[in-house]
Amino acid sequence: MEEINTLFERYKQSGDVALRNQIAEKYLYIADILAKKFVGRGVEYDDLKQVASLALLRGIERFDPALGMQFSTFITPTIAGEIKNYFRDKTRMVKLPRKLGEISVKVRAYSNEYAAKTGEKPTAKEIAEALSIPEEDVLHALEISGSVSLDSLVGAEGEDGRSLHDVLADEKENAFEAFETKESLKAAMQDFSPAEKELIYYRFVSELSQTETAKKLGVSQMCVSRTEKKLLARLREKLKDGV
Image (cartoon, rainbow, N blue to C red; front, side):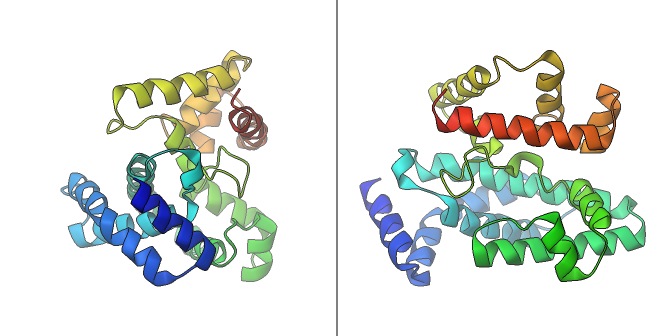
């Protein structure tokens, strides 16, 4: 672990792509294992391996060895989440009106490109201005594509880089880690109302869209969107401070 942490520290300081690739080679087997796990669901292995490999590279960019977490523990649920998002997006794209589907593809591509260059996610307004499309269409495309999903940051942006996928323990984590992460989230949500807990459950455990969650709760999609942002902000602060 000391050796890999040294590599990460060197990469964070230099940004040397060769170091990043060296780290990726050590953990490419995880991407391979997870890609194979999802084979047989209508997507070719090569496509799944590409999604998993890109998730691995993004995970390397986000990982901070100072957190004291093993990279394998961090990256496994992250890659699995990206693959699940890929399947969900692929399924929804089939059902989407052609125009909205095309917008969703452009929005996602621009968002990924922007994040790769700046290390941050663009706002809906920035995307709308860059692509010359209505902000409302951007919001709809983002919501349908599930871009929030389990990849929403729990830690403040630019700090620990953890996502809800990292906090909600994956089956590959050992028993203690699973207990510890679930207990942390449980403690952070102890003052949430039953409705707020339901919203978090539907969005980040059941992985429903905002529209689907709104129907479950009997409220509008906009209400879910606004409440979700507030709840994630509260979680960021509590988890950042260690509750």
